Image (tube, rainbow, N blue to C red; front, side, top):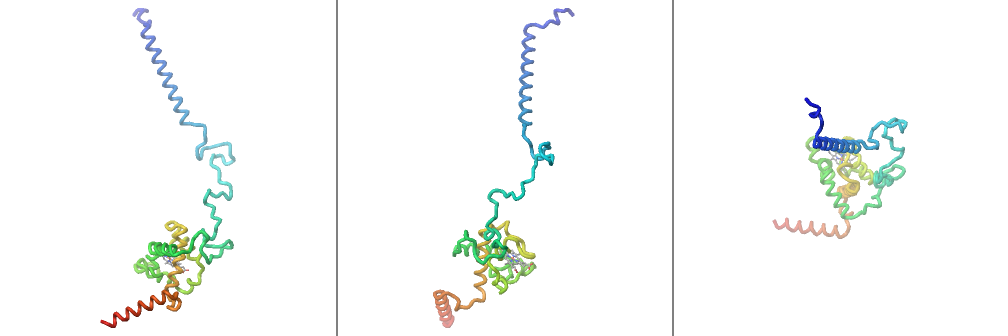
Length: 216
Ligand code: HEC
């Protein structure tokens, strides 16, 4: 083997240089990737000497409420006044109207009648299949309860009855509460308590009905 063999030709040098430059370029990209992956910010639960508890996770300051979740209006959110008593009226933002009662009826039929029955008697299908029978919603004790009580029961449940705050939003729970008053009025009221025009309509309908059946 001669010395001449070990000398590198000019072409060989060019190739070596190219390989070297490629290696440097590759190193450069790797370095860049590492930088992106490991950025100089703290991740959740990362150790940190900056805080007394030794972690980047810090407890919320006492009394913190997420934006939009401050439930200051106890009437609307809890059916209670500021001293914690159930309210007798609808909250200011819920308009008492025929539409409200119709919405309440629809929601009651969907969520409550399965146990309470459409009339509120407490003999809904689930009860007929063995669930505990609730008292009629139109019994005197419940007639005497403030409106906020029904909103509260729909929100938090009562005894064995589950809460409905997850399935039924606030406005609809108020609509249902208002509709329970309709059910209470519909049971045990006398014809004389009806408005005059409705009373007349009823009398006419009854008279017509009577007339029909007498022909048979
Ligand atoms: C799965 C059956 C079931 C459904 C659905 C249900 N309830 Fe009840 N509810 C009950 C039972 C059972 C009781 C009696 C609970 C007890 O005594 O442990 C009750 C009790 C009540 C009471 C009376 C509380 C009292 O003081 O006696 C109200 C008011 C009421 N429910 C409202 C509602 C409303 C409003 C809905 C619909 C959003 C609803 N319930 C849906 C089963 C149900």
